[in-house]
Length: 79
Image 1 (cartoon, one colour):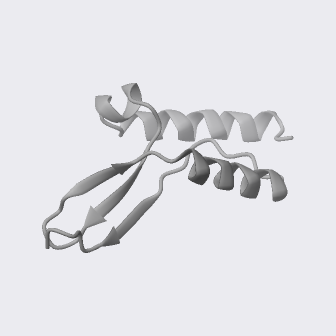
Image 2: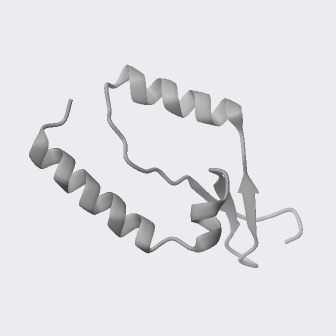
Image 3: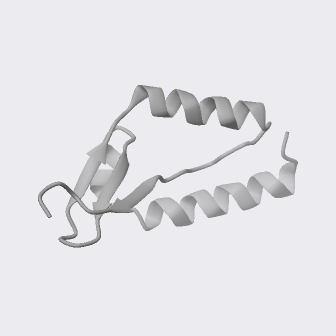
């Protein structure tokens, strides 16, 4: 587990991330994004399967995340 210094750094980094997030991001359920690079459309992606996969990767690697963001860039079906 992280030590005291690592926890302080983690807390400071988490606060910095949260201060830069919109109210929508903070108040809504966790979700990821599909982003169209042609029209800038953003599609919110909520997937329990994806979250479970990410959690397994985290546990398998004994990693202690404080935040994550998944953004997949491409072209939407309307473009």
